[in-house]
Structures are given as structure tokens and as C-alpha cells.
Length: 115
Length: 114
Image (cartoon, rainbow over all chains, first blue to last red; front, side, top):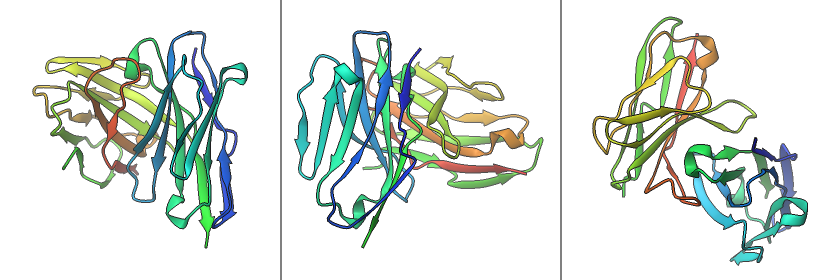
């Protein structure tokens, strides 16, 4: 069975602080993908990144960075110099072997950036 | 760029009523999905479709029906609404279900059953 755990239900930080959102996953499959989606107050889900299980290189995109560590089954997301527009619910998700129909979501982390 | 469009955005139903949530996409994606999002929970897959005329159950299909007569449209039907179906419903589409394919989501339909 697959499982994604986002232990942080809600996080609040002051603008310009850095913040890390944790994601821990469980799967018995050796081939899998991990995703992060952002859900702003408007409600839609916006794709941020995917990572496959064979690529443990960290990735940086502007103020966003992702740290994938298979040894700890974690795929953490860091926002540097946070901005008010980063306020949203962030979901980590896992897809293994059979594609999107087996996409398993975590419960999400609500991030609030305080001006 | 419309992407995935869902209607309505909000709806209140009485117990036992029926309704159809509409979903259409203009990206010519073969694969479409319906998820529900309950408070404090992640998204759970209700039904999905790999192409016109083909649908299959997801994790939580009970109480719902779907059809896929065209590539663009994937409506979700609630026949006898129950309070347990109060949720936010998301439609999504993707080019394929190839591992790692990203899904594009609609803005959601907030449904309340009273």
C-alpha cells in the first residue's frame, strides 16, 4: 500500500522567512514518482514539481527547492524568502507503477505567510 | 487557455436529490479523473477514464456514476445525495497515465448536502 504523510497541518511564518514543508512517503514499489501541488485560496491545484525514484538530485526553481532522500523516504519542499503569495495549501503526492490512477495524496499543509 | 473547466462552482443539495457535476477539458487529454477532497484530508480518487467509452472505479466510487461519451467531457453523477457526499470535487486530466505524467486540475466544485 502507498501512503503519503504530511505531518505539518498548518505553518505560519513571517514574510521573508524560509520555510520547509515535510513529506514522508511509503511504497513497496521501486519505480515511483513524487509530486508537489499548490492549492491557493482560489481553490485550484497547481502542479509544482515531479521527481522520479531514480533521481535524487535536489532541484531549485527560483525561491523553491526540493530535497529528495530515498534513505529517509522524504521529499521536502523549501520556500526561501517567503512571500504573501506563497500562502496556500501544499500537497505532496505519490504515483507508483500504474500511473495517475494510483496517485496518492497527503493531507496537505496549510502555509500562511504573515506580512 | 481554458484547461479543465468544472461547473458549477458551488451547489447545495437536499438529501436524496440528484445532480451532475460537469467537467470539460480542451487539451485533448485522453485521461480524466474525479477526486473528492474532504476537510483536512488529501484527495481521493472516485472514478477515472482512459478514453471515450472507458471508465473505471477509483478508491471511493460508491454513490457516484460517470460516463465518457467524448474526449472532452467527463460528468460525475450523484443519484441520491447523502450528507457524506459533502465535499469539494475536483476534475483532472492528463495526456496519459504514464508514470510521472502530471495531471491538470479544475477549480473544484464545493458541494453541500443538507
